[in-house]
Amino acid sequence: MARCAGAIGATARALKCSARPVARTASVAVASTSASPLSHLARPAVPLATRTLSSRAFSTTVNRSGGVAAPRRPDFKKLDADDVAFFRSVLSSPSSLITTIESPDGSWSAATSEDLIAYNLDWMDKYKGNSPIVLKPKTTGEVSKIIAYCYKKRIAVVPQGGNTGLVGGGVPVYDELVLNTEGMNQIRDFDDVSGILTTDAGCILEVLSNYLQPKGYMMPLDLGAKGSCHIGGNVSTNAGGLRLLRYGSLHGSVLGIEAVLPDEHGTVISVNMPGGGGAGALRKDNTGYDLKQLFIGAEGTLGVVTGVSILTPRLPSAVNVAVLSVPDFESVQTVFKEARAQLGEILSAFEFWDQEGLDLVLAHTGAKSPFESEPEGGRAFYVLIETSGSNKDHDDEKLGGLLEKLLEDGIIADGTLAQDETQALGLWSLRESLPEAAGKLGKVLKFDVSVPLSRYYELVEEARERFDKMGLVADGSIKTTVGYGHIGDSNLHINIVAKEYNEKTESAVEPWIYEAVAKRNGSISAEHGLGLMKANHVHYSKTEPAIALMQQIRRLFDPRGILNPGKYLPPVEHLPEEGQEKIK
Ligand SMILES: Cc1cc2nc3c(=O)[nH]c(=O)nc-3n(C[C@H](O)[C@H](O)[C@H](O)COP(=O)(O)OP(=O)(O)OC[C@H]3O[C@@H](n4cnc5c(N)ncnc54)[C@H](O)[C@@H]3O)c2cc1C
View 1: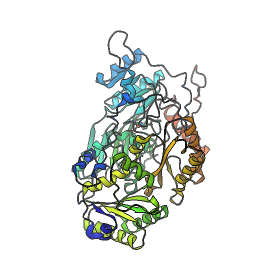
View 2 (view 1 turned 135 degrees about the horizontal axis):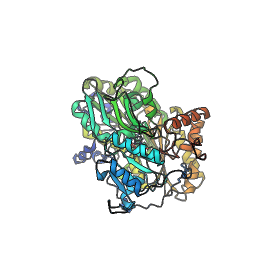
View 3 (view 1 turned 30 degrees about the vertical axis):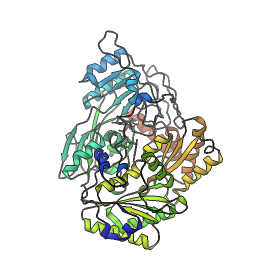
View 4 (view 1 turned 90 degrees about the horizontal axis):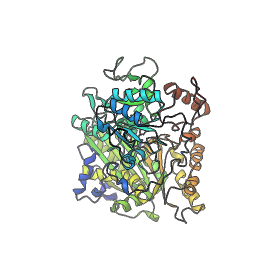
């Protein structure tokens, strides 16, 4: 690994980075065989599937703070053996149904609640529901029959993908039925001229990336949860991630959506999906309201997304990765400004983390610091710059020029430039290991916000001061507060690592943090969404008329409010239907 100012000072000559694209896939972990001092940081995908579920404490209450759930609606049907019998009749495979409900006649064997924990409990162990049924349909037709039945019977449903969401949206609050898309995992079509990929909603993001890579394409989004999250979940949360700076949001790259609506027919709506009727997946189609946009970021409140058509970019043939250390946050902004100016179109990621973040990752992984010198005063800020392009010499020259200028201007205190793909992965893992490292230290209160860059880091500083003053650091309630994020998108992740989830700590954070963000004209959810956590806080970022309009749209799609009740928006009264009282 070329290290510090020496290596970076050698400018373009030192830029012997991988000429091959850096594919941060599941095989990343293999990189740990390399002798690179950073390589053992390489992080596997989110280990959801391998979590030792039985060893965890499940004392978490349903109504976590920030996500104070409305009471269970009394009109929702309690699931029973008749429902199980129906679902068994429409599913093509018996393994598509897991239930704790006993069979009256021995037709099926009941699972234990432990078997359902992975579907009832979220990634942070923060939100836990008690669904007795998990369904994993394999086709859109099966989803349609399930949803039509749930509509008629008033069964509340939680659509679920990889269950990596961080706002309590993908798990039940009470006993809602879980409709998980993992059985819908077929790639439907790939057009290698246009780069348009059409796929089932349950395909895992990383599987799609691996499928595209040998064809010379890549997914336009990438995130730490790629090994578990589903493309349907990504679309439903409008996931941002590490490539948004370069490839834009899913509102731009998703070209078509297929979804099942919560009505009496389980209507399948296809908007710009190849073979779905009407215009296919096109970049340009100005015929009416762009309905697919409504499903992007709807968090399962308007329908169950069953298929997605997405525009995939070409895999770059040259990738460079550098991690730089700078003395203060002002310098982070200077580096970003210079990077945009000098790297232009090849700048593909600009990530940031603070000293607490680096310390946490090094402690968690046992790795050595990638920098040779200790930061002055023991503190520094870190940025990761990635370039992706098609002409290595051209990219090397540009990055070399940038680093030289930053060195000459005295902006960079230290730096490391990857010399090959393994090292690039190692540098990326410094950033990508952060959520997992925080989770190892304690219970994480995660906040994902957008704040104008000029006021970005003061939020972290204000949080630390506040917790200090309240005595929460001294008494061990809060172990550390870490700031990191996608600087290129003004997206800050504040992770407050607490000893445990409890009222005292959580009330110190919420709603203060939302007020602090609103005061800075930021958004209380940059990319993780609203879920249960922020449903009642949306007013910090949206006006009353906007919220009212969103509630009307939701009711139009889901008149009985069976999809993800109590999440996403403040609850509304459901219009009385025949023989029904008003339902809150
Ligand atoms: C380590 C880690 C790193 C992460 N990094 C990022 C990041 O960089 N950027 C980012 O944006 N997010 C990030 N996340 C959050 C999370 O991974 C994303 O929100 C992801 O898009 C969720 O996908 P999923 O399949 O796991 O959805 P789930 O968690 O299962 O569900 C999320 C929401 O979408 C709904 N939903 C899921 N599937 C469907 C469907 N088919 N139809 C309708 N509704 C559906 C659910 O009801 C729920 O409301 C990270 C999470 C972890 C654990």
